[in-house]
Image 1 (cartoon, helix red, strand yellow):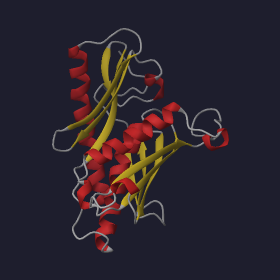
Image 2 (cartoon, rainbow, N blue to C red):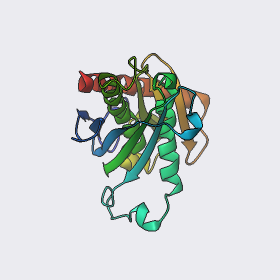
Image 3 (cartoon, one colour):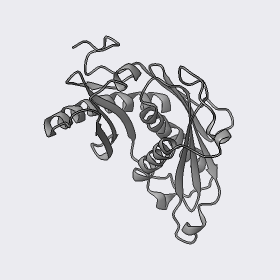
Image 4 (spheres, rainbow, N blue to C red):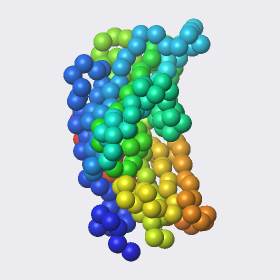
Length: 238
């Protein structure tokens, strides 16, 4: 089996994370997984949602969108349609869940951080690139909050990353690009922490059901991929 990109089954696309990409945001980066490019910003808001009042806890929420020419043909802006697609809502909820799961919200002192993930160019894996970049932007924002005195102590957070895997021509492969993603028999996304935890697994059989062994093969590849992303995140934040 030869992958369309010529990569080995356990080989990632090239990764680049450029921190501080947006001048005015409290945290930001441009994250590149091969030809998938996502601009991620983190915005500090002094008030958490009203339902968290007097709890001492803060909140992290996320929004996701694809620019009109992020794909081969122009897509209409969802704002022009007047509503978000189900896919957009599902992805931004995943991003928010992933970040909240690894952050001690009680250390945010009833403040909110809003993460925006805008896909500039899509070639598969936009949600996983968004989560991986969101960690960098969020960490920058948390540092800013502490340095500016909005929180008494540095908010606690585990390192998190996400990667796609799949079954392509019967073989488990890491980090699907669009040609593989569009033809994969199984498509899976893994959100993992640096200390070995699993935040979320999304796995769907596009043709025939997959078995336990196939899931384990993909999970092992996902750990390899996330370790590579952790290193890129640390380099960006250094």
